Image (tube, rainbow, N blue to C red):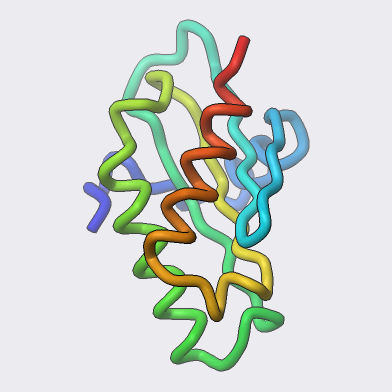
Length: 113
């Protein structure tokens, strides 16, 4: 579980990260990261798992897995950054390891200078 201070909750923050952040797409996820230089506070992460992924059981499973993957990678994110992880429909059949590999690949691309 992500600590409350690391959760992205406001729709305004989601919108800013998606519209103004850097984007990297992989087979099962799309990452949007808005690194805000000089912004105080911890990195915050939000998730978008829409109905195209599957029924509620599948969506919740994907959400839990993505949350666990990002919880272990919080230290890799810049302080004060906003990150939105959008699950694609193919994430419903992806294993935890596949999700983690795609998140790692997308993170390395987005955080590259």
